[in-house]
Length: 524
Image 1 (tube, rainbow, N blue to C red):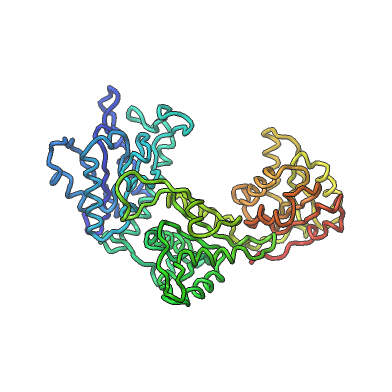
Image 2: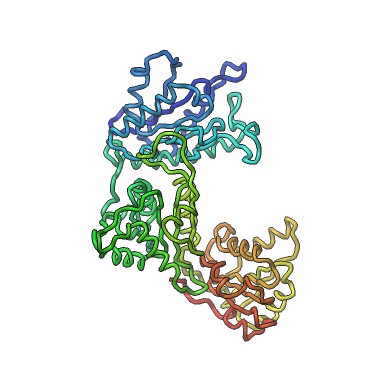
């Protein structure tokens, strides 16, 4: 193998690779899993990936060194086929311990990023070794969390795939490993991988600026990974990845200046607060940044504009090199934040594992992306889809009547809930230029869920964004329709225009004049 190969070591219990039927041609789970993973990695072009696993049965009395030590010494990634069998075999634990020791000796501080769990059977996360407790892993089975472990449905049984989700999990795992392999290979075969973001962009900038808080020491590994994920998708990070926090009172201006440029702040909260710049500014850097971001988030914003917010990752289970051995202690993310700074209404707080938090972050960034320019409406007249709940049919009818002579053409969805009606309305929604949501007697739950659904224009099957997304808030004047409250409900830019007609009675052409106007250009 080439010195540039990135080795993946599969740690498994041999009882998880047994034939479970009378067929001589049957393959065990691990053998089949490796073959399928090899093929998908090849399909993705991950030519540097080399999978190694021991195919001999190692008894507890065998000498560990010499049988698998060479594979572990070369391995950059350890894939653990997790099961009760794995937990019960001492040599499996030895493989994990040896890999961790070898990787740390090679200068890898956050070894947990080199560990990948593949779930063959259900094992309670807290029963795993501490370094494997921070990730759920790629599970090749399904279970109902409301029921007992006995209700597990494996995706592979008796030598064959019995659930197509096997291949979905395999594809997700292969894509994940490919990204890890590429990062490791960038480290010139040392296995250390990149330790600092490059001076030049690693992707074409998309024009969006994210405040990624400078971390305390226990969040440095997560900070580095997040930085690469953001830079790899074209986001600009402030403060600059390679810049250092001033060691004096200038730290405050350093943080404030960076926050002023950003559309959102991302803050990683572990157990440590980071250093205090000096006696002139004795507040540790994590608390400083949480405070500055809270101050900006508390500023005024227009109802139709996305609100600057703090997105806080306070993982329930920490994975840090100095963590004591033994079962991991689960934290409450809300209480963790309270130890550092006050929570405010616009905060988004997540305590899941890092990979899940990254998915959550990019989903949020996708949902809050600025609108792009849309083509001019056909024949100069805007087709507007009027969405409303059956409880608001009368008010929606009044809106249609008031706009009858306006420059917009209101498209009313068909009544009913059968499959044919849903298909018709879905097709109509894809063709309209704009969308208006009508809210009078409907519940807050309905309007919020509908606003979120209509915001994701790609999921609706559309080929382009809406030219405008509007909300008409009509009577009755209940508390949750106050302008200040609606600003909180719809703070992620679900609407470009909000008409507050709660105290206005029946809609008239004059009250709906803004809705009837042609949309302006795309938002900033």
